[in-house]
Image 1 (tube, rainbow, N blue to C red):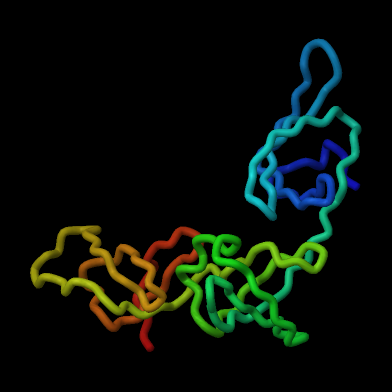
Image 2 (tube, one colour):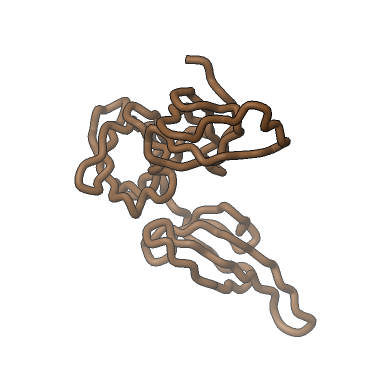
Length: 187
């Protein structure tokens, strides 16, 4: 059990059997009356955001979450299939539950899956992935404007902005947290 003084951004708690993450926590001590903690919480299941207030000294349930290393196998009919690298158990998540990181997901990618009571909630990709550019405009010789970027379509279908000197067929490193180009990679 957590106390209200433990509430911090990023803390995972459980309310009525559903896992939530604290998005924002603010301790308030009014001039008159008891102190309380005001929180903004995001559901790890539905993504809904709600505001909640606890009086000082109240107890909040701990969320029992498990983080497992998984390997992405394939996508079929909007379901993304993963395999536990230790037990070889397979789990599937719908695209809407995976979110935007699906655009950087390739077969055999090692991910970290968040599981609550045997039910998969979400995945975390590695911070950087290496993908091949399948389509982009050729760079124009002599165009050396600093920080000039052009769109490039990657092997996963994602479109990112890359510098003018990067060509079709090259491999690049992408930051999965921001979705931005980092550098070219030799393959």
